[in-house]
Image 1 (cartoon, one colour):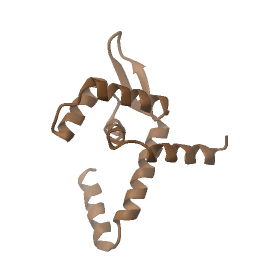
Image 2: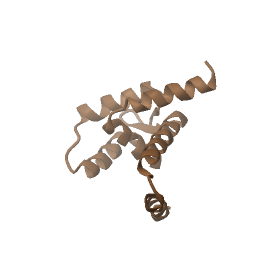
Image 3: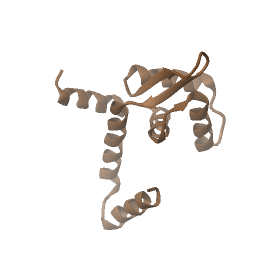
Image 4: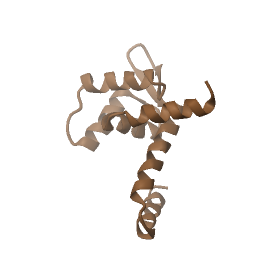
Length: 119
């Protein structure tokens, strides 16, 4: 498979992700985390409890898709890390969103200000 096909395949996979799965990728873009830390970030974002039965199957799906890597911290704890494919998938998603959102200079400036705030 050529590199172009791989990028296209990853992009099409990411476009089929649920918002919940995309949010997991965004959280893991910050740093590798274990499952309960991811759960806490999601609960903070959603303002409600995220149960294990929702979180871990979605993490497993992201691992199977090659967007997240799972490693063992100890016998009971796994760590999850965004892969290069996951990173590229997020960039593709942001690019698509910015393309739709930036309709004029004012909106472009709003995004620039937002990026500067989070540097």
